[in-house]
Length: 581
Ligand SMILES: Cc1cc2nc3c(=O)[nH]c(=O)nc-3n(C[C@H](O)[C@H](O)[C@H](O)COP(=O)(O)OP(=O)(O)OC[C@H]3O[C@@H](n4cnc5c(N)ncnc54)[C@H](O)[C@@H]3O)c2cc1C
Image (cartoon, rainbow, N blue to C red; front, side):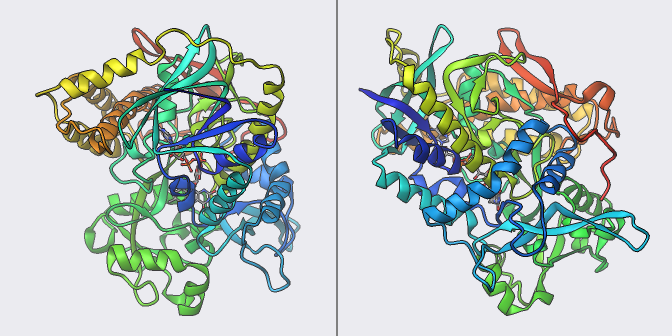
């Protein structure tokens, strides 16, 4: 079956829906999502969305820019960061006007809280400049993503966006370098459909599911990133995977940084607030990469609680009323998943794979880039976590990613509206669905072969152990061997369940193929990058190396394997300095 829309957006998270709100005023828009839209991972975002509104105390866009550049360990492109932070206040007020119920200050303004790495400049008695945490994250209790997602969804329904919920996309349709649509299957009945469009936009989210310990939803299997890679589009900075400091032990379910923003302490087995040894000025509110490494070091050196793989996040001093008002969601999570009442007991936490800084390369306008030189792919756009603009560089600051999704979703929408003015449908290449139909036939015909579960468990386990918080050449080489071995096995994977209706095994097998595809790019990039920068920490190359590595990785899929090229970082005002907090 063929569906035709001016624009097909894949992904109903904040990036996809914000672009849909922007474009649906002018064009016929279809949104495809493998989940019901409001189940997208954006809805799980707890802590907040950054903007220098200055509602609670003085703040400036310039400070937000500086913090984001420094937080990115100087790998973020400064033109993109300036643009994101500059557009942030307007984007937030726009959300407010669309109906997002933000928490409020006493005088009715949007309330703001502290988050790691977001600072203001003060001067001590000797006139020396010093940076301390600032109230910059706009929030709605600890359900910020949820309320924004629901509001945007309502706006899309209002403007007649056509939703294809529970459709799973398989491949892009490229014709002589131009994107003309895509193929997808309907999860409800296993039928393959073709979507023909003048423009396609990906807002397909992150790739944290390649790790065993992760805060990501099951859906975050990085499909869009892998599908673009397979279609000949390169991937940027894939080695930069953020590990959030506070995942609930042992699964890694997120405990928002907002908990530390509200005053939570991190303590080791001796009851010591160990962050004083790592980031004495901002303590628990250092950027994520630093807090994560500090926790992992405490655990590795035997100072985990009872010698185990976790430390404690103590919120007991905040009191029941504050926890109820500001952190109700995570209070509930701790009770449900760990049997802990945070009012009375500390929460056991460990670092958890959380955010994908890398992804599909785009320019500031949401055009997908075909190479390291900046040439664009006609008809193809991307925004949100699947894209790499790059505003987060080597380490994203908390609350900057909802912002990235909203600001770039909106910008990309505007670019697409302009593009659609002269764009045409063109003709689809013959048999656009053929490859996917063959793939499905092959899976349905299997009677024996490799077990997908075993492949998945091994990939996730080894990615966590060998390509996690601390990395070294030996482990990365071994991880690469594992991936190549698992990719071979995957070619003979056996699908046991042959049903057509909601065949979740089929879906999981396709997701596994995608995970193997981009994990190769993560590890290949990590092996090549012989330095420590942001979230990428090579214990065998323990320093940041600006002479050789102040550059973006651009990975290409070739017949001989992954080929890496590089492109320079855009540096404007802020020259790289040592990152101390
Ligand atoms: C637990 C948690 C808490 C977070 N808290 C915060 C926070 O407080 N502040 C902050 O700034 N950031 C936070 N983040 C990060 C932030 O939520 C995400 O980066 C952001 O929401 C991503 O939005 P998105 O629109 O790019 O993708 P998502 O919201 O992940 O949406 C992806 C969409 O793509 C669709 N999709 C994917 N693959 C396919 C396919 N094959 N076929 C069809 N559809 C597909 C999915 O159905 C979904 O609709 C948090 C992340 C997590 C995991």
